[in-house]
Length: 315
Image (tube, rainbow, N blue to C red; front, side, top):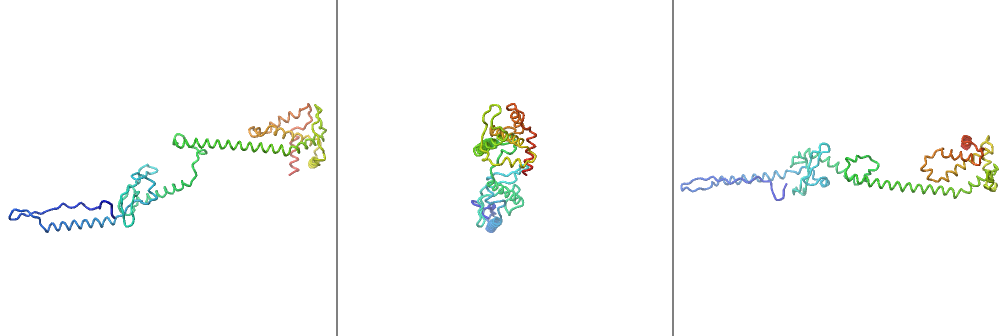
């Protein structure tokens, strides 16, 4: 292994000179000792180069892991918040055709050598983090509207997101309610437009059979129709209910149509917003019974009994 700008050699030995005193009191270097020292220095340099070539870069140098933590920063444990590994900077090491830019190694790493046990354990953690990051890219954004979060521990950024999402949700729900109201109004208007004539014919037929073509109090003409235009629908209903009298069936039908007319007159807002039960119809039914001072209309129980018989025969 080679490192840029430096080679891991041992520091050179200081030149040691063995001085001998000759007969002329002049100092000189022993040539044998000097040659031996130079040979030892060369041997040590060769040994260090061979040892460095045998070393490997420990840690996790994969490129897909380098974005997880920046250089000179650490990754803490999820439970203890202690640093378990760190990212080492660009040290410019090359081996054969591989160039090492940086690596993520454990704090207990053996530094140089094959991947140690601690770095192998951190590698599993890095793979999980990379997998979560990939899943986060394709997962939909987090919605806080239908979730419960404590605002005390919630970050400020998430609080702003919660408020914006709630505003959007309220606008969406308001638009949906207006859309349903328009659709319901349209359905009621379609009923009035398309079936108005049929309802009028049925009312006229019932009133003609009960001699109610003219009002009892005012004497005005209430309605008129050609009996041949509606056929024998009322007669079929009378035949289905064998024990029912003609006048009783006509009164029940008149009361039912009056209740339907009452709901149509109130509009869709009444049905949507009011806690709609039998009480509003009961109250209106009572007023209808005493309209004109007459008390000859069937009671609620008689209407209920007649409708039960109609459903039983029709089933």
